Each structure stands twice: as C-alpha cells, then as structure tokens.
Length: 61
Image (cartoon, rainbow, N blue to C red):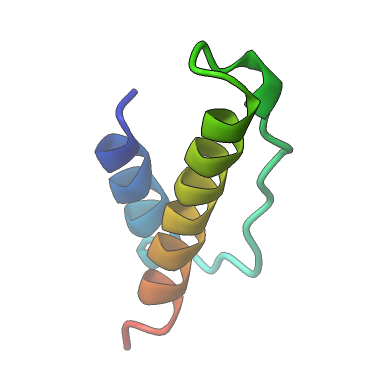
C-alpha cells in the first residue's frame, strides 16, 4: 500500500464513521535499508501524513 493510499483510507474511514481517535503503532526506523537516520525521517513523515489526513477528515465539516 502506498502512502497516498493509506492517507486516503484514513481520510475516508474517518469521514464515513464516528471515529473518536486514530491509533498508530510505533514505526521501525531501524529497518530502513538506507540507515537509521533515514528511517527516522521516513517514519516521522509517514506518521505525520496519517495524522494530518485524520485531522482533515475529522474537522472537515
């Protein structure tokens, strides 16, 4: 699943139901093939994108 697909899923799921919160499990930056620093960067961007999609949907109306 791409990041864009995940963002769209979070957005649609939040819009289509009475979701109260978004639970995101921890990331695994140490598993990034480009190293730990790149993993922290990628994980932070990904988690931030999902939170933003949730907030946009939650406060859409």
